[in-house]
Image (cartoon, rainbow, N blue to C red):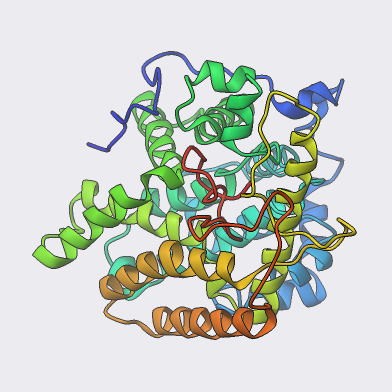
Length: 406
């Protein structure tokens, strides 16, 4: 299979990938216990499926799926419960002869490697992206061509695309001379870390150990290509390619390479789909990502070598409540989200889901405009129209940023 894994951000793909020390390892002394399953793990899984949570899973393919409610109903285990259900409903457990206990162990490792203290980049965000990815994998224009391997790759990449995210963006890591920035030579720093951490957990859990070596190597490389595609610095690259394919009508989804490309596009859409959700959920995600920006801004002030500019989130004077101005939300939706989702709609033939998402996007833009004052003051200055930062993505405020939100 030919993928775009020759991109400069994908450093050392031929080398043996070992589990990197995660950010959380600095704070947990017994990390080896992280993936150990409690007694009667299958019983615990059954409990997650009971009652309202089980009812919600019957509607997991609906776009108005409330991931916040689902996380509460599963006692904070939304990612594990969702993935177990999707792997079963897609027939992946049977097709790949996966051991259920081992799968659960791996998913617990992934879920626990997300930082629950992050307002935005946490396991709930991963579950939300995974649910969106599931919806996209069901699009008729794509679904009929997908193989079980494609589906498994899409779900795994969505679940792990931000694993061990530290809650700060790539420019912060570079400016503070973080070891990850040095390791990945300032190229797709967080995306590379998310990918390598995922591969480390796959190997540590031995989830795919029974599969042929060539197949597991291919899975690892494809996961890397998918996760690295979420780097926002590559947005124009992927959007240009998608437009060209749609203009030339030369997508051949029976070919593995073209299916992989559309999986990359689907993951990019899932990663920044918050503005296309219903207003109540979209607003909550926006508040969370801005709170994460605020925390990074506060942390930045502890480093005198880092210049604080007017490109920070717009804050109230008491520095406790974040005001999200329309120009930030509007720029993010207009220049990042809308172009990608309009091309996705073209690909799907303006499917009901695509039209629904674009309708929510238009409504949410109007909502932000009605809520935001015409004038605002930023912490460091009056702001600039070139600041395209916004919820649902890692770093649009700075051109050196990486691919999701702060």
